[in-house]
Image 1 (tube, rainbow over the protein chains, first blue to last red):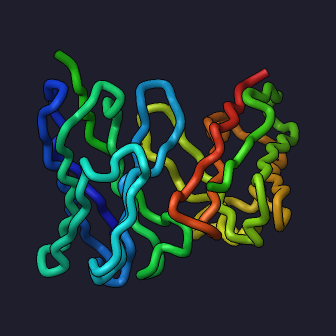
Image 2: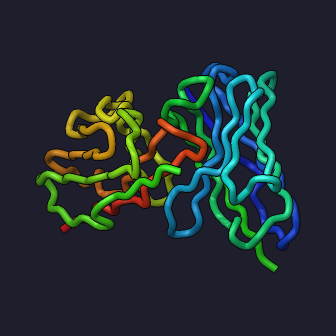
Length: 121
Length: 108
């Protein structure tokens, strides 16, 4: 059974940092591009970042470019999102999602439950 | 950036009736369009990909159509468990991956 389990969400002050993790199981992790999607309370889905199956290619939304870093450890089936210089508008539930291809040019088949990040002073 | 626009924002339909949800892209996405369902407190679930192919385990009452810029998700004979928010998403031209703003399907 496929499972994506996020962790690391917490309260943070503006300007602070958090590191999110996503533990994957039940599929060949290295064959799947992985994406972080966020959802502010009561709002819609917003793409944050994607990493290719090998980890050699990364992509970011303009709103997080230069502040967030996506990475993965295929030996441990783990996906990460390092979040620096946090802003109030980064407050959201962050979902990790798996694409059924290595380059991301395909839909997101698998989704995690999400982890809540709250940025407030 | 390709902008995805969904209509209507809210759709009220009675159980057993048909629901038709629309999604329009600001430029062609070919057939690289997915639909997701999201219920409160749950992550999105992939329903349709390639504009018209049902994902694994999705009931036959869900169908997708369209190509280019105009797409439709149809749910025939609505069941109680179908009342949720539905999002379209293009994966033809990215970054950025873009979602529509969602259509809330509510019980009439």
